[in-house]
Image 1 (tube, rainbow, N blue to C red):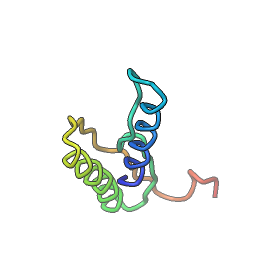
Image 2 (image 1 turned 180 degrees about the vertical axis):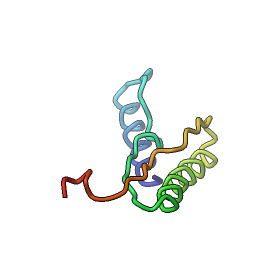
Image 3 (image 1 turned 90 degrees about the horizontal axis):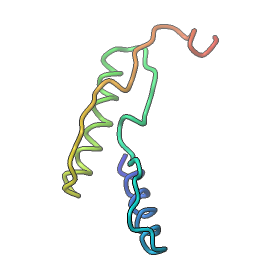
Length: 83
């Protein structure tokens, strides 16, 4: 998460350098990440880890925070992969 947020910052700074002042952009957040996990505990931990990284970044930059949990879904078996 931190690397994506850092890259996002570089892109926004470059756009500002080119004269783009007002931009309505969606920023990277845990809602953009999706995963599949068989173990319900592992799914909850993965979701939590994404949010911890996001919240740590925003605490450093002091932006407002919107929290929506539940991005990693639990799925039993490999049928979702066609196996």
